[in-house]
Amino acid sequence: MARLGSFGYLPPEYSSLEDSAIVILPVPYDQTSTWVKGADKGPEAIIEASGNMELYDIETDTEVYLNGIHTPEPVGQGLYPDDMVEAVREKVRKYIELQKFTVVIGGEHSVAIGAVAAHRQAYSDLMVLQLDAHADLRDEYEGSKYNHACVMARIGELCPIVQVGIRSMDVSEKDQLDPEHTFFAADLHNRVDWIEQVLAKLDDNVYITIDLDVLDPSIMPSTGTPEPGGLMWYELLALLRAVSESKQLVGFDVVELCPNERNRAPNFTAAKLVYKLLSYRFRGSNG
Image (cartoon, rainbow, N blue to C red; front, side, top):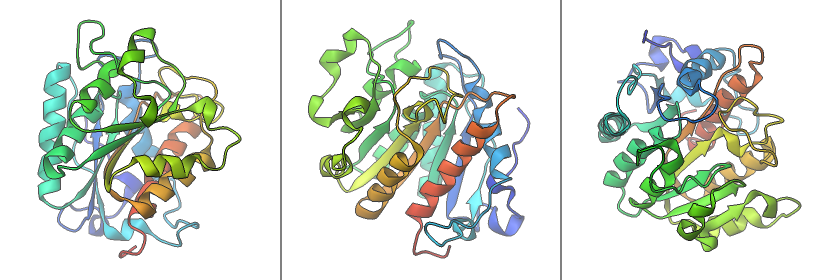
C-alpha cells in the first residue's frame, strides 16, 4: 500500500517523529470481518478527512496538533491474523519506548489486540475500556482466535475490561460477560449517572478501544455491522472527556470505519473523534 499522508495534513515541523508527542499508526486490515468488507480502507479515509478539519478545538480551547502528530507507514496488511497482531504489538511497543502517545486507527477491531498487548507490557495495572455495539467475547470464530469477534476475549486475557454500549451478542458469549463491568446501551438512555458508574469501575491507567459502531447508525452508518440504538455524539464525548480528566489515558484506538464513497460524513466523524480525544488527553500541554 502506498504511503498515507499525515493525519491533519500537518507540515513537517508538526509531523516528524522526532518533534511529535503523538503517533497515529494506521493498520489497514480487514481479513476476518464477516459481513460488509472495507474496513481496510478506514485509515486512509480517516486521514483524508482529517486534512479538512479545523485544528482549533472550541470545547477545550486548544490546538493539540502543536504537540506534534506523526503518521508512520501502515502496518499489518496482507498478514495472517496472528502475525498482524504481533506486527502491531511490535510497532506500538517501539513508539511507547520512544515515549510517544500512540493511537491505532483501523481496520477491523482485531488490530486492537496488538496495541493493547504493547500497552500491557508498559503498564502492569492497565485496564481497557471497550466502546462497542458488540461484546466480541467469542473464544474462536471461523477457525481463528484472532477474529474480530474474539477481540475482547483475547484482550480480557491480558487485563481487566469494562464494556460500554453493548447491544448485540451471541448466546455463547453470555457466560464470558461480566455483568458488573458491562453497560448495555439500552440501560444508558434517559440516565444521567451512567458515566460516573463507568468511571467507578476503571483503574488509574486506562486504554480505550473504540469500535465506531458504538455510535448510533444514524450518525455512523459506515461500519461493517451497524446496530440500532447506539450512543450519540455528545454522549460519547462526555464519557471520553470524563475518562480523560479523571484517569490516566495511556493510549487508544478507533476501528471499524467502513467508508462509503457516497457519504463521507462518517469519515469526518471518525477523524474528528480521534482529534477530540487527543484534545482531551493533551489539554493543558503545549496545545
